[in-house]
Image (cartoon, rainbow, N blue to C red; front, side, top):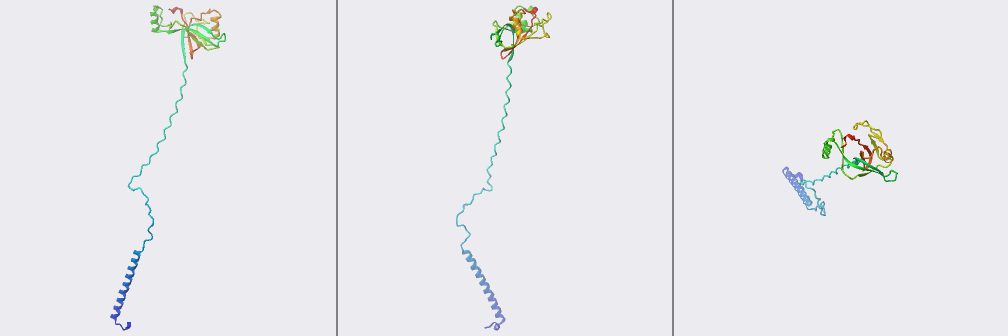
Length: 233
């Protein structure tokens, strides 16, 4: 039967059936396409097993980083050692003799000293009282108290010898004036030595009281301590 022979109703039914058939074909084709896609093996999956790299948990606290220890403070340099104090001292006593052990070269001079104590004030009065000589005491004067019977020997500075300071020789002060303010007379040791041994100690330089300044136990200065015979016990 030809299309033109169909009635309008028949034509509508045929068109409707065609549309339904076309939709069915399209739906079947779509269903078949999805099925084939689902059945196809996945090609993007890895064939080997890859161990996952361990990562720190987000909530796991990080290990504290040890701070470097501070460098030790430099030790202070030791202070320089103080210079040793000079071993100077003084000895008081009566000069008993001067000896030259080098045969005239004055390379080995020795002084023989009868050491004594220099007493003033109450110490002097106590000593004089113990000797029964308290009537000789004067607070304006000093007294020599022998400390031992033996005579001490000290080496002296070699040539030109120790310095010598005198107050009553060669020039004599006014009678009765023995105290501070006396004029110091610097005498060469050679002259001092000669007046003792070349002139038979005519000036009485031995058995006088002197202060002997020591440097490392060597006499470097002989200083007279004048005495007034009026106050001698």
